[in-house]
Image 1: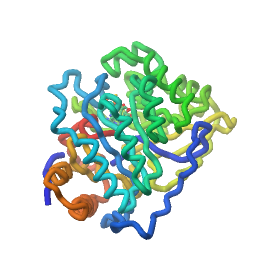
Image 2: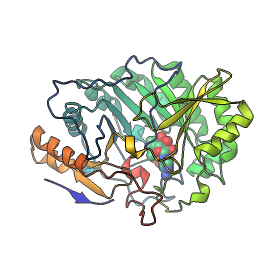
Image 3: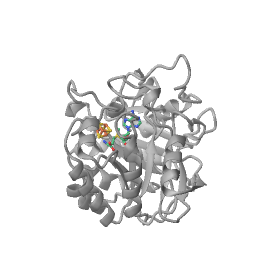
Image 4: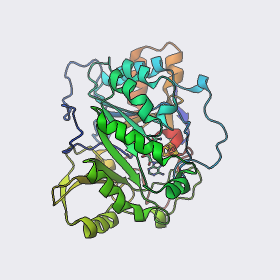
Length: 364
Ligand code: SAM
Ligand code: SF4
């Protein structure tokens, strides 16, 4: 069994009223006839969701994720091939995984991503094939991705000011993100926005961002800053909690009514504006950890399985695939990864240590 030391909390998915949601399936009904047993950890959490990072490369350098200067990205031969990803996802789908989200790095930097989406869409039992992107290359690639079977897209948008965009991402490019959002709205995909607030940089943008989302009938979710930045500058003072944001938004837009979690395994606490105009979600892994309902696994771009964003252990499924292992052996490795999942990430514990790898290397 291949296993290695190294170094989930989440940034996506909730299911509630969304005018851009054209997908019909939101509830998961495990198939009793599936080939492998369900992936249940020692705390009874049934795993149904997988994040697949397809690259660690990115076209921007968000300060909460990447360093300003990167010392090289993974070379091609160290990336999991599309065929290997397809094989591992097939085994996982045969053991109850229903949702796959492609991420990175910036997933649209991986050439021919639509071919991977096409391969994944042939897998029985998968209900969602989703993408999280910074949106800069989305307008060009969306038609092919949609045609290939992509069902959901989350676009990260932290500000509507170009100067703040550059301060956060150390690159230009807000206009291309906005073009990506426009293209996504016109598509058949379910579209959501993700925003991360840093107290000293873009907290002032939360109201304009919500207004932007309301004007377009999009759901926007605010994700708390987690200690996963490559620069290791994470500091509790920079974290803007969901409850603080709710107060700001309510004083501007009026009251927010909780709609809870449509699916208990979803990390987002969702609210609708009492005026009926749109909704907002809060993903609060720092102030309100949701580990007890975490049902996610992760596959890094270099083919390591992880059971938590903050885990310090990884399971090398790429090497296993390359050694002509059977599907049963791949399943056994995944099951081992699940069995070793801790109860919680422990960010608030005194002995908490930031993982060796940063967000862009794990896959957010
Ligand atoms: N490049 C794509 C993007 O930015 O959407 C996909 C990968 S990115 C790592 C996925 C999500 O992780 C983004 O929404 C980003 O805001 C979030 N993220 C990155 N670093 C984070 C951190 N330290 N804490 C919380 N969320 C983070
Ligand atoms: Fe790139 Fe996404 Fe990380 Fe920003 S958050 S640096 S867009 S991978």
